[in-house]
Length: 309
Image (cartoon, rainbow, N blue to C red; front, side, top):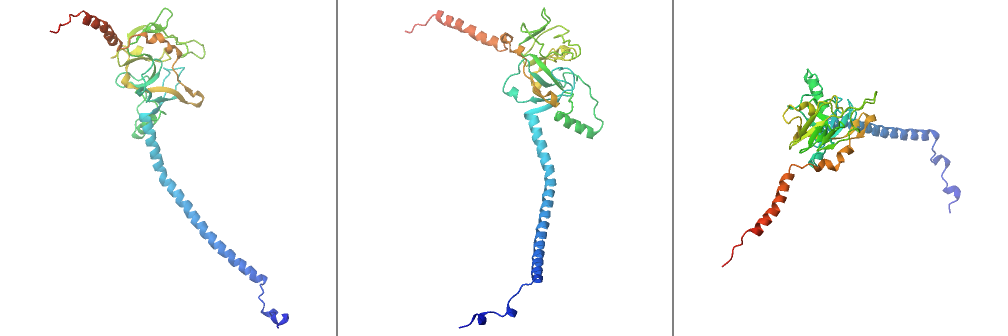
């Protein structure tokens, strides 16, 4: 048998790892790690550069898509409008931006008390005159601003609907109130009130008596003393009324400035049931049919019957 001494490996043949060898090994491993991490870092930087490059390439596309979507919404659904004049104070102030619903009148008729935006081109003169931009760049930005409600549009007006087709709008009764179909309107909640004196506009300083024809609207501003509305256009075709098909939509909310954000509901005075007592355009025809029914039945009863052979 071999002794433990014989089986042992001589000291000089044993593998010994010195501190220098360990250091060399560690340094080589670190170099490998540095090399690999350097490669990864390079690849990471390249990826980041690619991402940044692709972002700047995609940005014009994103802006273009956003503009197209905004124009589609503006054209068919909701549009922002800038308030350029004092004709609707205190309800709307100069510089306010309102959103206009362009779909609502495809689902319901225009109601008394609605605040509507309409196109007055070729019918009403602008309430506020603006100098035409002198160069194409200014014209372009003016058009974009008008489209998105950050610049005024001299062709569009905003007023409150007082009379709809068939209504007789008159000023004034013994108490100085405007009447619709003989029913007086209580307009204190929205007529202009001077913040300094507390004095409120009269419903109208001039008298009028007009029956609104089919397809037309009688409209007035809330600041009656400065508003160039239906009263001021009675010499125009339509007697001051505007065509319903010129209405762009209903203003339903103020969105700017932030301290004036508010909704634009219909005042309660227009909820009076008696306002709708006037005959609608189709009512006379309907009454004619109703009246003809008993006459026809009576005639059939009194008519001599033929005898069959």
